[in-house]
Length: 226
Picture 1 (cartoon, one colour):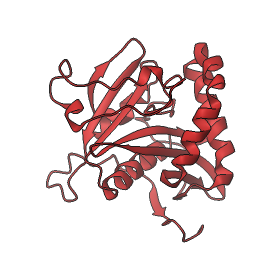
Picture 2 (picture 1 turned 90 degrees about the vertical axis):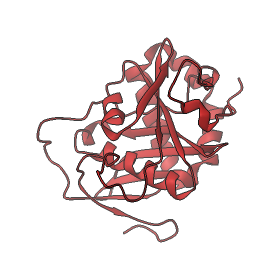
Picture 3 (picture 1 turned 120 degrees about the horizontal axis):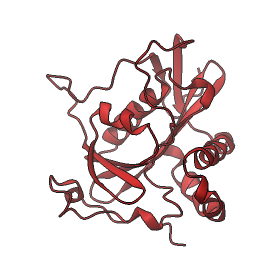
Picture 4 (picture 1 turned 45 degrees about the vertical axis):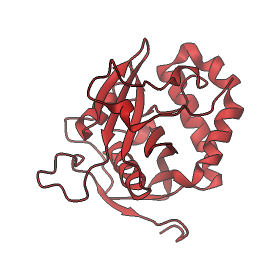
């Protein structure tokens, strides 16, 4: 099975999705690329047990088992019919994760990892969200928004001009993307695809800002854990 990322041009996010060049994510080992695995929609009620401080840090090789477990949990929760296919492609997925580990970020709640995000660059200034997962016991605390904001920040700093992602139609986390300003470009039988131009560093109306989040400390790569 060929898991190489498809070529995606900036024009694939044009205003008319019918004429856009659509990425063929359907053949990528049950779409390991570009799907978000936070399986709860953002809570509109006051979250409980919200941590006062959370830390986003660079992922390390020792975080790979958590990434594997998170992906498997997602498959069982959202795409249970395709778990076997996903397991058959796990070697290719592992290659994808290790190749892009420098672009992965882990969010810690105290000393405990609470979630993980990983993205990858594609040609023509496109960045694709590979996965974003928050562990069940830490959901509805704004941590998914923190990781999504980190994706936007990291991809922008790398020079990407367009952010792409896909989410399963049964995953209520799509609301997270829509609230953050991602616009749906097209859909297939199972997935909804979204895109967003990298927001300007200074936005007068703040239209690209994510919702209010917990206080966040980011640790730069190589600086170690706080």
